[in-house]
Amino acid sequence: MIPFELFGNSWQSWAVAFGLALGVFGLALLIRRLIVLRLAPRAERTETPLDDFAVVLARRTRRVLLLAVTLRLGALAVRLPLRLERALVTVAVIAIFLQAALWVSAAIDFWIDRRQRRTGFDPASATTLNALKFLGKLILGAVLALAALDALGVQVTALIAGLGVGGLALALATQNILGDLFASLTILIDKPFVLGDSIQVDDLSGSVESIGMKTTRIRSTSGEQLIFSNGDLLKSRLHNFGRMAERRVALSFSVALETPAAVLAAIPARLEAIVAVQSDLRFDRAHVKAIGRFGIEIELVYFVVGSNMNLHMDRQQAVLLAVLEDFAAHGIRLPAPPTAPTLPPDQAPGSRGARTIGGEA
Image (tube, rainbow, N blue to C red; front, side):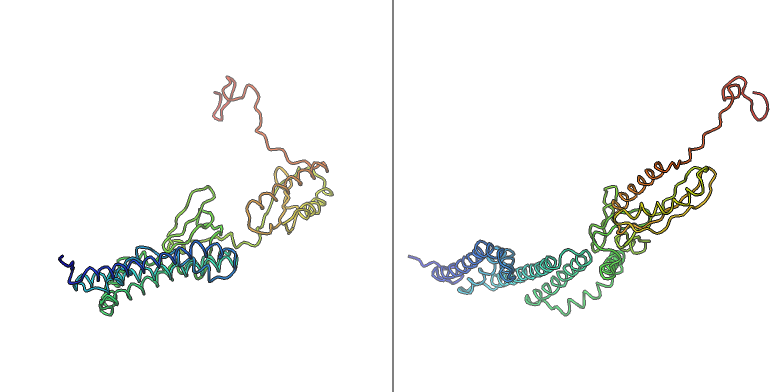
């Protein structure tokens, strides 16, 4: 019987190598399965963050990456050609760093999500935390990529120096993109608006849905999504209605010219009483404003507490209906709209007797 050999290793050595690799791989999968299936239900019933964190890490563990590492461990039991051994080492190192990136990314997500649940939803905090999540993952990716290259024998110092020179040329070529990137950082730090704010940019308005690294997306009042470049957005005139503590409302209407002065003098006090009975309204003033051509003008000014547009319109409707009821109860008439003068039949347009400015038709 001819003994089996491969790369100078007997079948017993290969059996030990595959047994070691499969044993470690199976043990890792068993631990992962136990954590996901057994620990996860218990973690939902407890307030301790450690068991929740262990479940998150187990779910982010990838079988393919585990297999690449365990194959390298099994290969330690045999002698391999130099090129094959280097290939296994390279694959194992890449797998280790990819799995580390997944775990650290999961840790960042876990910390931010837990903080948001603990403090409740706050648009300003959510905007800042989303920025921290993006920047943290970006820095993480860069550090792990450099560490992986260094572990593989790449001269990282020379690579960084080369990237510095090339990065300058890249920055000049992509200055518009970088301008939007820095504008997004300005938005996230200075917070001229946050998620959920209702804003107006020039003649376009809507609520902020997302703040990205290049664009900000706004859901307009008519339903469509508006996409603004962050750089252009900061250069525009912004109206942030979400920061509005009160909304000032000035209502003007007219009453008939023949309304007695004593009745007019009592109108401001009754308007104040109408506003006072409405919730979320603060009376400012009411006056007989002017005598117009067709009626006497009355002006009522009040404030709506809050920035909600639906609340503003509901209260304005209630005030106007109450004003109409009050005027009807006190016999105050609104001025009739002016009507066009009627012409005699013989001067109506199109009649045979109609006259023109220049003489007879």
